[in-house]
Length: 304
Length: 304
Image 1: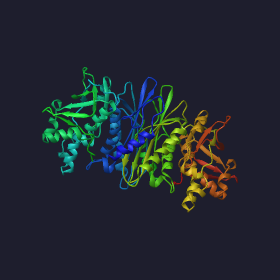
Image 2: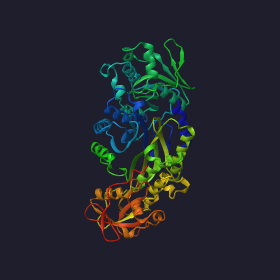
Image 3: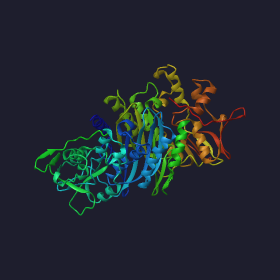
Image 4: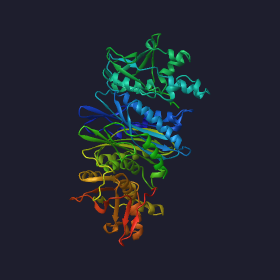
């Protein structure tokens, strides 16, 4: 993945230096800054029309996605989002109505989470491109680093639905016939779930690329081994539409659903479903029902 | 200006609603948020290769510009910048060395102002495009609204230099022969000047498009009339290279120098040069040496 090589270069150049910066560039989903008794979390994420917007996506859904992807970063760190800013680069053919719809999509999501859109910049280029910046606060934040041997692994919902919807759309189905189309076009940031989980989670992240990538990031940064148990997985939502092995592939490697995955000690949890455990060691493993163990690779679909 | 029509649409959709948001989308250079005893200021600004990067600009200078334009927004509101994030969209032909140089340009400016670069996102598209997002704090912020009849108008330096450099570059001069080339390629955000001025200024803004646009924004938002006195202007830096009327045109309508303009009561000032005064009424006027009064229009060069 070329993107990860460029990220590596950036992380080396931008080492954090201020004492109050707990997580800086490349460290986690968000920057985490200590501000008195609480924490300011900042994040940014950008979307390109060609790479990130599936066919049939409406302008309002593009706006939805542009803010949701940022709120999901904050959710995955246990922060409550408060403020959003964006830059938008418009191409020829985008008129005031299209533009208004994109903005209304942003606004609708912002309102739902009580986020104020406080600034933006508008530009003109060759491609529709939206960069979002979100700021939020946390009393207790959760990083990808922090998983402990003995933790159990939870997920807030079934991943793979957005990927399934995309594949059905690309193979010619009308959007109204496609299951889980809302996971693909208007995924919801799991803000409430992130806030609840942050009370007891030792590590957490959102799942934008794939569960496999998120688990590998947690394992690597926490210096632990994660074992996912096939026995624990409920793939029935997916197997209603595809065979079991395909469902498992979608669940592990499909992107775009914006669920959260976190690890925590075995306390009374009310968020998500258990899917595995944390052990000493490294890597991410799937324990099949047969007892066999298979590596879960650091890969996801480049979704669109 | 099509951009301003789109901004109008955005400002209508994104009305601020939270009590602590003092300035929201479209209100000013930055969003201003009350945070206990101090203020959090957030801003975003984006740059396109084709529209915003002049010929002969080096990759490190692109990085410089991408952060400086954001720090200048904070400076124009009297904030001390603290954190910076960016998204960068890379086109084909940008290799790791080019990318590293852009980042080093960002880093160099960040270090100079003791700003931490705490996050970013990397993407691939048709054009090099950088969106910056800066956060800072102020004890006392200054908006464009706030100029009072009786105030005098100050500017931190001579505007028009960047525009002059651009015109000389475009007419075939080598960059090493062009005066004020650093104003065009590596303009400095006037952070110290903004902090000093914020102690007594009633209104302030940075000058990115042109002095004319900045003055018109202050006049409109403050519901006052601004009169610039030609008698007060020192255009000698410009008249060393062009005739007087051209120098005056560059001073009023040239963009890109990142100076600040502010209004304040006639106290003991140590920042900038006086260029005019604030009166009751509306509009922005140039009082010529002859005594004639000419309108200063809401326009700037679309610089590059």
